[in-house]
Image 1 (cartoon, rainbow, N blue to C red):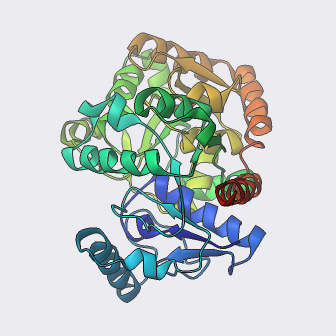
Image 2: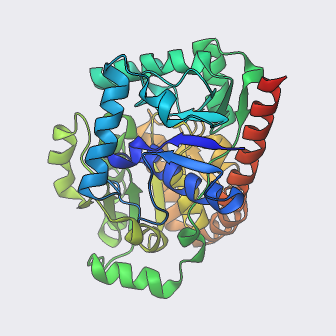
Length: 369
């Protein structure tokens, strides 16, 4: 079996999809061998994940994006040539014209552009509509949560039997972070007081404004004892939110090696997103042993289970009350920490890769019959 994975999202700025591809490819190669798992463009293993730019050098990045442009915007059968001999091609949203001579698969990360289009720029909406046609044509699909699978069936009309739910994973660093690591993160980022942490792109879907409102509504004595720390790159339509972040500790983009110790250093992790296909930050915080408050919508209850406090992401009062509860009840924080660590064990990349290999084997096998 040989699978070719479109890895072009690793060459651009990206968050969740890039995180998924990087660790997924690494663990697929570890389980099946590099010869069985190829990438377009070819990328060496362990280049180091970063979200603010390409993980590859300038030459490899330029060549990869140029090849993608030729494949997308000319009639040349570029991807057919580059995937010759492969059993399956796993497409990303950046591919417009997948190869026609091999099995077609893809991962469905979320349906947010269809369910909440007002929270996305026009370019994203166009790309997702185009990708939806590839999803409908695919021989087999992975959904990163049952919630995402349900949305794909309901919104796109994809037959449910075509979609396999395989939860994404959490990097080992979040499971292995020590108190010493967390202390070093506090020193590096000058976090002298205990803090509530949010990690994510500053954009409307992440609902940072509600978090700012809820934190500001806490009793004065609580706000005097805790900081609100926000970490993440600037995204779409973020100017108004950025102006408000002067009242919080805004760290901007945090490099990948710092994310696990920074997360582990938090007293509470707050993530009131309006929609997630999986919700990496929540799973990561649970793996790091941090008490979590998150939204009661989309995939977040599926990922968090009973290991977090769930709130209506449109309700400032619910989020405020949940924050106050966690900040004033150390026993509850400890209980959620233990429950989160236990639950996060199901989100290991090794298991995700093993299930994904079975998916490819079954999809390729059934397509040949």
